[in-house]
Structure formats: structure tokens, C-alpha cells
Length: 248
Image (cartoon, rainbow, N blue to C red; front, side):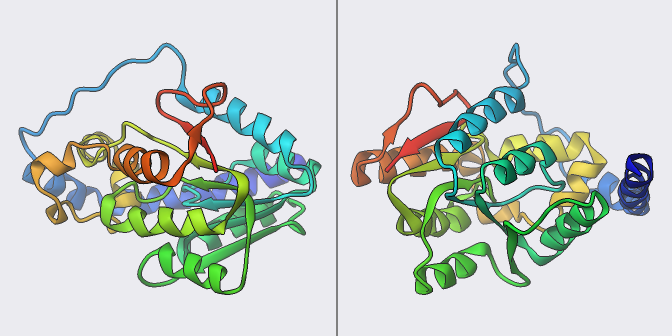
């Protein structure tokens, strides 16, 4: 049975990879348009995803029976994380584009995953800020909110302000990719066809100057508005250079 599930999942992801290849000429055009662009990256000894997941696990263990909102859920489900969420009877809501959420639902169904505590809040147009505002209107409250969305000023500034209102007093706001910049994204999109394909319609680099593209928008918003002006405290035991855990 597990082999059948694995093969079905492999088929779904394989078909997505084949679709990427059809866009190969457009990816080359993107690379040509950005010819000469360079972005230096700092090497880290450990994969940041490993240390981040350790931090998330510790937080999940603190909120059994609680509510967890993830804003920006990525291309594929985090099966191990969702398994732990189920083990602690945590109610999970994933918020992202309709196509992304439906892809997650498909993969969870293929895996035969227990989804009684898992739901998705989808937006087919615009951004997730509208979806978050609707949650606020309904009186929704969460113990932990993980913002790992667009990472840009115009989109994530309203999202983070809404997340603040949706978070319970004493709750945790998780912010990923603290040093991230549009320049970093552009470099990844130039290196990887799959990265370019996934993000190609989500970002308009012309919305920002070259200087603004090089700045870490999430870090700027967190420091200036959440920590300095809204009283959030960074949990130094759970935070990492690329990953901040803020306590309300």
C-alpha cells in the first residue's frame, strides 16, 4: 500500500516537472534579460531547514489542542510537520493561492493523510491579506502564526499587521527567511527552472528599485513595526539568524 502511495505521489510530482520543461525557452529568456546579474550568498554549516523544523517542533509541543495558521505553505506539504500537528490535536489552517492549496490537498489525499484537523484558506485572486481580513471579521484567533509568504513589503506588510490582530495574546509569530531579498530570489530563479516556474507569476521585480530589491523586507517590518512599536519580543532560544520566533 505504501509503495502504491509513493508511486502515485511520484507520478503527480513527475507530471509537474514535465510541465516545467515546456517553459524552458521562457526561462532562458528570463536569464537573458537578467544577464550580468549577480548575488553573493553566505554559506552556512547546517541546512537552515533542519534547525527551523526543530524550532517548530518545540513550539508545537507547547500548544496541544491549539490553533496554527500558516501563511504561505510552499510548493509541497510538510508531511512530518503535519503528522506532529495531528499527534498534538492542533487545528491547522494553510493559507495560499487556490492552485497551491489544491495541490497540497491532492498530495495529502494520495498519502491517505488524516485531514480532520487540517483545512485551507484559499485566494484565487489578489493576495492572502483579503483572506486574513475575512478571518479577522469572523473572530478567528490563533496560538501560532507562521508567515512564510511573499516576503515583500507591499504584500507582507498588511499581512503581518493582520497576523498581529489574529494572534492571541502571548502567542507566537514565526517569520522565515529573515535575510531574504528579491535579489536572492532572482538569483535562485536564474539557477533553477523549477524555482523560476513556481514563482514566475508571483513577483514583479519592477515594483521595486534595485536598492529596494537588495533589502530584507521581512526583517525591516519585524524590527520597526513589531519589535520597536508593538511590543513583540524575540525568543532567543528558538530564533535563528534566518528564522525569528516573536512572542506577542
